Amino acid sequence: MRFGVLFLLALVLPHSALAQEERFFAGKQITLLVGFGAGGGYDLYGRTLIAHMGRHIPGNPSMVASNLPGAGGLELMNNLANLAPRDGTVIATFASGMPTAPFFNPEQARFDPTRLGWIGAMNTEEFIDIAWHTAPVQSLADLKARELILAGAAPGDATVDLPRLVDGVLGLHYRIVLGYKAMNEMELAMERGEAEGISGTTWTSLRARHADWIERHLVTVIAQYGAKPHPELPKVPLMISLAKSEAEREALDLLFARQEMGRPFAAPPGLPAARLGTLRRAFDATLADPLFLADAAKRQFELDPKRGEEVETLVARIAATPPAVVARVKAILSQPGK
Image 1 (cartoon, rainbow, N blue to C red):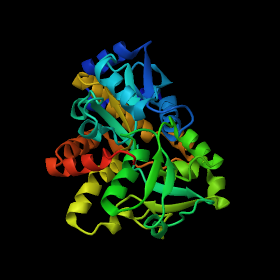
Image 2 (image 1 turned 90 degrees about the vertical axis):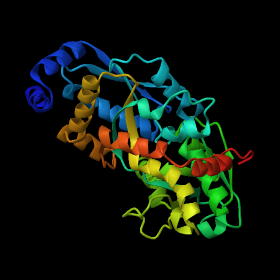
Image 3 (image 1 turned 180 degrees about the vertical axis):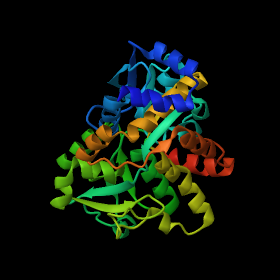
């Protein structure tokens, strides 16, 4: 296995560069920072990835995960951009909405997403709204007339930004209880009756973590945020279908675009190009590794990987959003009491 991995890397790295990478990583440990608490979807995906990724890196370094929740992921992003070593020994996974954080929270988001070393993304997110079966809101039609109380993390996270946006653009009604650090806390809050639903969770995560909820009809999927229906949710309406103008579609797309880079992985800025290339190709190889794929299948993960170069291009596109669109969305997201 190790010979095969090194042979593949030799196709894209000169021999001297390959040897240098092996010497650097041999005997080292790579830490994966996870921007959420233990047990959530990002944590499970990340830990499963690093259980296999080390053997696809020259020198076979060990890999460990360290959870760093806080401020919806901003604590992790600021750490990655400003404090983490810039040699490939620290990488991170975080909410896919982080590339838009500097637009909406510039005082706290002390990083430039276009300067990060984008390693890749594991799937296309399928963000959805769910309501507990006892909630008074069980459909989009209900949301136009009644308030749904949501559990959320913090501004910058999909569980907060997405409902605020569709509330402001489409006139739906949400009230968000902030401060939950991980999805399992939000789910527990919904079970306990502290909240009635969750916005900005994913169908993949819900199905993998709570298949029994689906089978027992304990939750209702009210809407989905993708450009087209998930194959398993053909009758669940799309939020984007409610847009009545191109201006509304542009505003929604600024945040909806994050779904194209579900469960992203990045290194600090300033990583040498060869080192970033090593991590990118190791990520690609892991996502094609039969042992990893078997683990992912057992956990019912949905995979639709994107290479680091693709994620880098998407982040640049988001960063180039017209200022007028950003200003409108920012005004919506900054409204108090939402």
